[in-house]
View 1 (cartoon, rainbow, N blue to C red):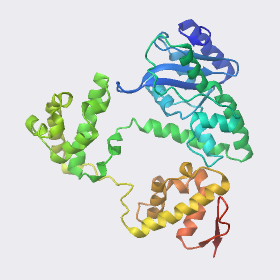
View 2 (tube, rainbow, N blue to C red):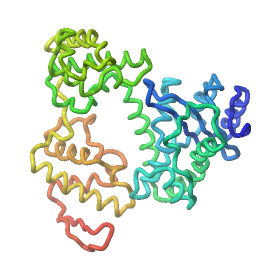
View 3 (cartoon, helix red, strand yellow):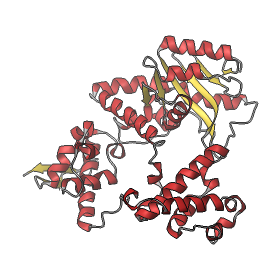
View 4 (cartoon, one colour):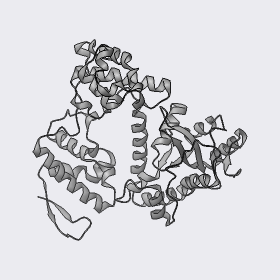
Length: 396
């Protein structure tokens, strides 16, 4: 146990020295997210070509030697479904990893399966079986058992071997640059979660009018600051559905706020005063400074656009099956609908707004195919109903 679980600062710094020399490391974390503003980091796991170890952050107080490695330009960090690891890095350093590899994404660029669980990925690439994750474990409890440590280390044990094989395969397919682009996209999307416009992602926000949006923004920013101050999940300050209800009803007094039945719960009731002040602040925003209405991914009520998007989806699925690449990684239904609107001139045409399917490696995969279909230059027919890609696209 002592060799595999590091609980002393000197031993941890020695491990970081080994990682620096190797220049590559597999990385994973265990955390609990139910009761805090941000997930609580409970364990860090590392694997180099020569060593595997877990680090107890409750005992090792200064983790900065690792975070410095994570963001430097010389250390490749290999992970699976790395979004949470990126978030921890951002919280610790305010910066993004520079050389991140996500093997889940890499696999989707050379097969039709995405996202694959770690267990399925290990079996597919290495033909090895690993345990199911300890989803019910409270990783805050100490001491950790031998079994918990073994489970945790399995999450990094095979990552370097997997990436080595994926890298060879992606290189042979001339897709390694695709992988680099997708790793960077993951980093940027995760970083964008902390931008000042995250309130725009609330479910149902697109139904609000500009004045209601101003109120929702005030409530969201207040809620986030309050949750961070108290280190509790934002939903315990104010649920999303109640936030939107406040924006619609516009209560300007505590009694008006408490007119909503669920607001009488003790944990919400005491927030009535601050909520009323947020509503008042939203109502005071000048007309010319109100937020613009937010588009919905499902706003294309025009049936013709919907049908065209579905047709393009068939073409995209067929193309992805032909190239052995995951359709969900290439483009979503929302991406297809946006491409239709863009091509028909219903979206502002600028370089910044260019559809994702028309940029980078996605343009190589399907951009010309989809736009030629929209221009009526391509017809399709069923060639082999038994094939994984039964459609044939022919230029007129």
